[in-house]
Length: 162
Image (cartoon, rainbow, N blue to C red; front, side):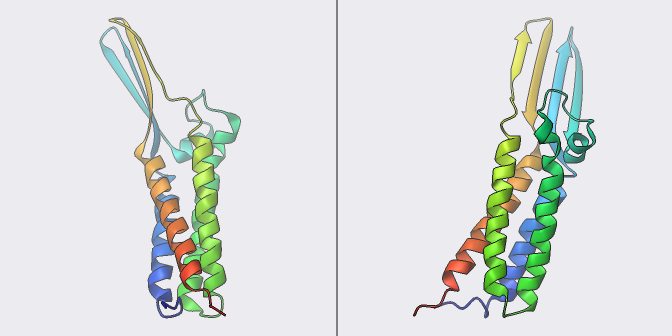
């Protein structure tokens, strides 16, 4: 059987990588608004912090303005857990379980953000409007999926059979 204590440095590094991906995603594009009127195109991009500062997409719900800060906080706690996993052997299993839980919480938060309506409206040839997700959302999803997989798998593999 694979022991978590033997691989705790690798597990800790993977948890830190997933956390840094989710933290870094808050500074990247979360949404793009494209408007074309009479042949003139206007493109606005919104980062996670734009949503938090209230400068983001105005048709988003009130709770969606807080989600980038929550994503950043979950990533910060996950990074601390990753450092703890790689440093101490007595708390490694509990920290990996917490990392898996943070990954699940982050995925739920990203799911709440994704309830925001993405749409395209067109009155040809006068007006076209399109709102799309940015790559920051996908990077946060990748980071939280990594946290969830590494956290739950290492907790499951590291359990002791009695």
